Image (cartoon, rainbow, N blue to C red):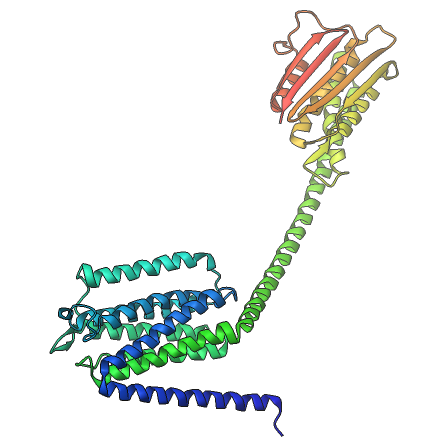
Length: 492
């Protein structure tokens, strides 16, 4: 007992046989007509091809386009213009009486060669466009084919530069025969390209297009043999052309109407697979980048740790040197150096405690740095420190000079501003306005001389502050108010 699949197979086979039988009857009728009235036969054969070209164009725009089958849209556009040239070829055929008789058979033959050349090139390009999305280019493709068609018409009818293809009483010219052979070679190349893309196509659509190209080659070869435009070779060539166009139409119907969704699903599966492979590659790349980043972070952490240890060693050596000398001036210089090293030590200490090795919190850094400087001096309990610092981050390259500036100014205030006094105060303000920053350090001590200019002072501390401010594209001003007020402004 047959199952459903077997019944469907038998039904399809009978349908194909019925179609072939009907086709043979129609071709037989056309052959009989050709024996009695060749002009009628030629007109019917060409009108069939022209009708198929128009139907293919309509299917391409109304069905193939929405089904994401852009390569079929390209084919539909091209066959519309091929059909237009075939229509004018039919009207220009010898005996039709539409164009002047003095044109003879040459004009119709020239148009035939032009249409077949356009068809061959189109079929050669088509396999390259399978599964490519270019619907936005359909207007440009239309313009391109319209332009080529216009040039062909001008070359045949107006400019008279199209090579002669047929001479009455002689037959086909060398150009016409050579062109047909070249067209056959191009079509053979199209067959090879189409075969290379068979896995990207519906198998039945591939077969229909494949046999359409083979039959087209047979038609072109048949058209190289005739001497009389009403001869049997010409009839045979038109039979092959009818079969070829019917196969093209069948391929369009199958692709756009019978199995449009299988084409869409196949394309979706291909896109899904491509997306999956892309995602795998992306994840692999992401893991590789993360691994490299972890390795770099480990190395950077180790570098910061070693630098911190080295700074600590320098600081301890300076402390030992300070303790071992009784020279007051030397001791003072060494202590200043210790404070400067301390500002760098604070930065590296904080870098090791954060995950971001490029930037640090300015508020935390400045507050800790100021307190560590104050703690060095025995008078620290007498001095009140007030800090008003905006909370933002800066990169390490700017924090180093900024910390060194704070160190110099706070150290100077602690050493000189409150001499002979029981108490004092230091106000530290750091404000940010967009990309502009203002650091103000003010004490209520004895102040600076009225003629003091921080930018012209020969003292090492003043020169160091000026140099450090320049490193962060800043400027320094100092003035007397209730004591000494130093202001550093800089931009990022």
